[in-house]
Image 1: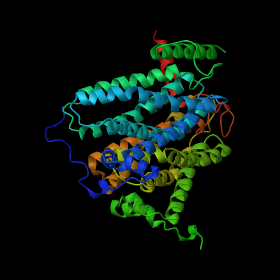
Image 2: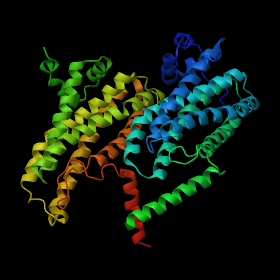
Image 3: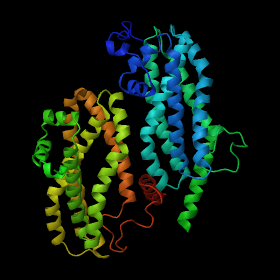
Image 4: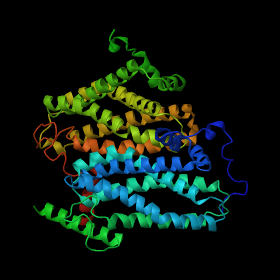
Length: 241
Length: 239
């Protein structure tokens, strides 16, 4: 439940009311003044800000995708960024309607465009944090041979980035007169599951394959289990050499 | 006048004493001169310590480690700079990129200065130790030297981070915010630093292996994978 007193009202500081004119200011604002972004999403003409945030998300996920693609190189240098960016956008689109429904059920007064804006904010914060992780991921990509290990590392980075993104989303909803966050928390589980399944539906993202998309349908847990088994048998055969 | 001519070594004692107010003011304004001084302290301090570490194996190994030790510090600082700058405001400390980078660099400067100060002691200890050999690798002397390195590096690291914590508190994070930011930065730096150390191994050098800058397997596998396999092997022995 949200406390009855509620959070401090948005826009009570002049800095929060300052417009966000471009993508650089949007990036700065989501890191340092998330309340400013939430306030601006409630103003007329928020569409431009949402478009800017989606644009940053796409560019950042493409850059992170190139870093992920360096693990295998070759065609993965373009396939991984395309799959990561497309996968992220499709996951967000698939989850947007349910997010809106859950927030309405929780008593929120947020409009659909506002909910879409908060989701775009989640994506932007998540992907710029992934850019922060990119140098670390690149170092490991160059020195690690295990696909399972690299996959785990990227999942850890994605999980940390998503947690910060979800924190922004929750802060946004706490300002929308929502009486309960139970629906929102249910949606978080759904979003996580969709994003994880997307990594399997668009595989391979890290490894290589003859086809751009998989020919066999799999649940992500079964895909991970297969990857771990093949990695284990590879390391056993290496240790016998 | 060249920037290096204007270096003021007294600034290092201010860092070591942890005069947070002065240090916080330094982080607020960019100074090429101060940055150059800090890089020089890291290169010299960590380099001297690295030389003392590698000297036991071979003078050539001493030279290699003198280059590699500062390199790890500088690459770790650069590699996590962006991430650390993003994490600070998200965890409650609203400081710009320049200030977070500067704060972390200063904590490494303190650690490097401590390492540099301990390097003559380490060199003296190595000088008094029988030469490293395949037989000596399992002898008490080898273990003693290893443990001494662990103790000195841990002391330098803990002191650097204690000063960093004071600085973060001064910069406005409060004790809770400063602790959160410090642990997040530590996690990132340790995570990348361990892997960079793994890539740039050897440091003390094994007597049964040749002296070299990188091992041939430098880019095969990673630190954490290796730890995981070592743990697996230990548990398999009990099966």
